[in-house]
Every structure is written in C-alpha cells, then in structure tokens.
Length: 136
Image (cartoon, rainbow, N blue to C red):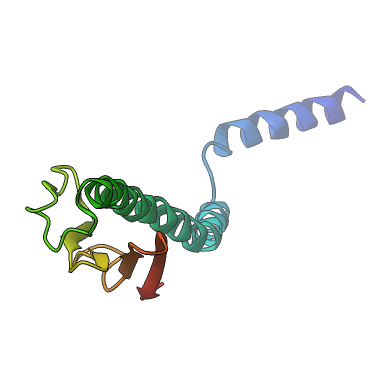
C-alpha cells in the first residue's frame, strides 16, 4: 500500500511540474471564441454609433427651425440664406455639413470619412418636418 502511495505521489509531483501554462489548442479555442463574440457585437455597435451621430443632424436642424420661426414671426417670411438668418454652423459639427438652402428648406449632408457619408436630412419650414431623404 505504501508503495502505491509513493508511486501516486511521485506521478502527481511530476504532473505538477510539467503542467504549467496552456496548450496551443486551449489558446486557439479562446482566441476563436473572442473573435466570434467580436464578430457578433460589431454590427450592433456600428448601428448604435450611426444612430448617435444622427442626433447631431436632428438637433442642428431643429435649431435652424427655431431661428426660422423667429425670423418668420418678425418679418412675415422665411430667410433665404444663413447670413440673413444670422446662422453660423456650430464649430463642433463633426459629422454633417449644414446649409440654409432657400426660403423653404435647410439641409444636413453627411461628411465624407464617416459612416453617415451620403445621408441627406431635410428640414421643411412650413411643416417643421425633419426627414432623411437619402442614405438612411
């Protein structure tokens, strides 16, 4: 009995000495699981970030709408240009380019290099609607 116990303990000590670290298979399995989780999560994150960037366009077009309403109340017509409206695009406008197009609409166009590139948001003064016309 003592002999078996000594053999078992020597085998256990040898196993403890040799089983340090991970095998290649274990590492490949962990890396593949992480890659799979990233592939599943990435499209959701991109959609979330695009929706967050669209908030900028809606907020700024809402600001233009309020300026146009004030201008209309004072002058009985809508302004045709941003300078007539005393509108300056915000310095922090990163994703969209804003323009007071005419006396009926204003636009926000997605800038190149971002995932909102090609989007066109339009504000119609008469109805106050902000609609995405392209790229949404």
